[in-house]
Length: 313
Image (tube, rainbow, N blue to C red; front, side, top):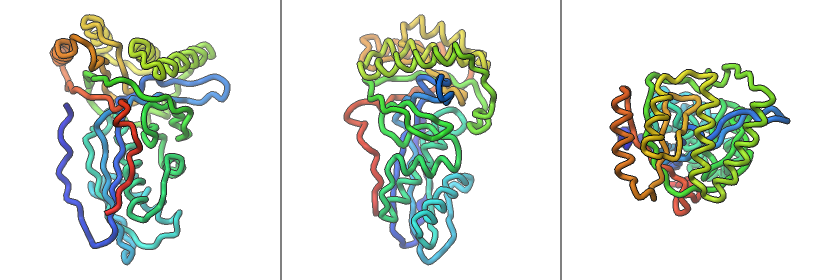
């Protein structure tokens, strides 16, 4: 599993404290462009790893501090929320995350959503998913992690397309090809989708939406694998063929891709009778390819899919 959260001291200056959390996603079950409005979209795969934000308000001071210091987008978001609600002062924002950066786990989006929830909690401001979308839209394209469960999402417009539901628990054995991908830069890469491509993405989205509602993991895996194949036309992934063979050899559900990241995963149902053997075999085979290998768990189960509410301390 991924490593524990980094130990970061929360600085308490005596103000009201709010805590917010947001899960990451393992890339996307599907990502492409739809006909008609010609909008790019993605379908999330929430995982248990998350970002947690703690915000301590300091009404008597205007400075906004963020720990770690490089989380500038979250620092900007704090100021945007304070100004939008006519609040004076500043505060200290501390972010702790189990989501690696630049890999395709929606770490930036999770940081921002957790930040919004923490600031809202500290200030007694009700920030629902739509309100958070409005704030994030001014900062960067975003994954749909402000919404619980699996959603189809217009990431460039930062707008929900449709809430799809939840799936039985999944495990993802991930291979990392190395390096980091800047999501903003990736979203600037032209992708010359044809009219036929867009029609296929529309069909795949329809099939995937029905599969999630029916909890049909085989159909979900088939659509996700096709999305990986379609993306390969625009982004070369040297280990992709080898990962396909590993998935086929263990009779996995399919591949899942961080389209704007560096990881590709093999999907295995937790209820699979050969679960342990498949995970062990896939992990060993992925390690033999070179590069980091990690194991992740989906968050899309009914008892964990309730809203991640902000807390006030």
